[in-house]
Image (cartoon, rainbow, N blue to C red):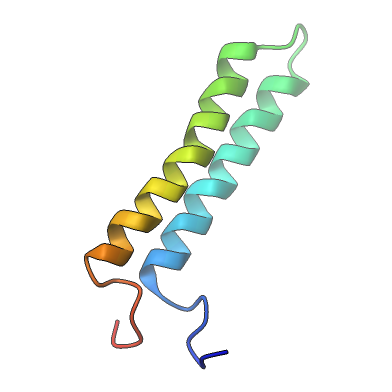
Amino acid sequence: MSDHHGNTPAAWTGVAVAMLGFVVGAVGLLLDPVSYPVFWVGVGLGVASLVIFGVMAKLGFHESGH
């Protein structure tokens, strides 16, 4: 494993957006009655986190120099 594993702007941003997606999805499921639109927004944020990470990695933000 490299010394900078997970310590790049791309990794931090991807994890932050994914965590936001999990929180939004959980709130949607905890509401009474369950709010499926809010839940699916959370799922969308989770998927978007993968896309954001991929784009940032392609732009060079997943390298040790950042």
